[in-house]
Amino acid sequence: MEADLRFPIGKPERPEKLTEAQRRECIQAIAETPGKLKAAVAGLSQQQLDTPYRPGGWTVRQVVHHLADSHMNSFTRFKLALTENEPTIKPYQEALWAELPDSKEPIESSLTLLDSLHQRWVSLLKAIPPADWARKFNHPESGPQSLDKALALYSWHGRHHVAHIASLRERNGWK
Image 1 (cartoon, rainbow, N blue to C red):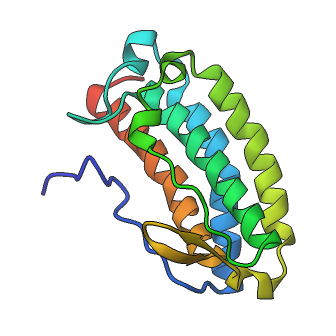
Image 2 (tube, one colour):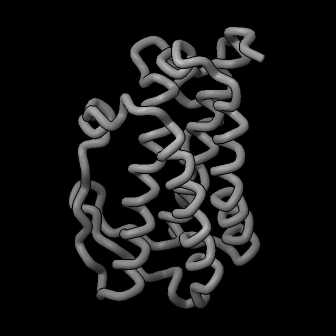
Image 3 (cartoon, helix red, strand yellow):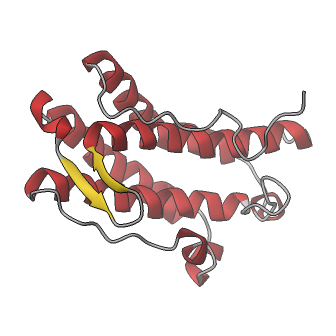
């Protein structure tokens, strides 16, 4: 059976409510994302960074910048949900963001940004009281999202994109 290059770790599971143990696992995965991403891109040449992870997919470089863009948006969404009553968030056109000039820049700034962002984000996540995980933000395209549901998604999201890069390295024999 051929691997699904688009979803190397499978599609996300997004339960409305998580257990405390599931939250801890998700937060740990978010905490580990920057280090795992750095390891996945370590030693890649510029040509390798500009290789799509799958036919028709983004380049490794675009994936790295996308993670920084996406996780900045998610961090903001968590803060809005914690400080406002079910705020409506602003979606963004991730595919168009991936085509902007900054997505062709060196990846170091996004690696540094992701590392710092995740330090702050993990600190916030660990401090959320149990009752506040039910707080929601409203996504205009997909409706209300609990913080538990968003946590599960972003725990998956980092692992998902790191797996894109790791599987590309493996398929191409890049050591």
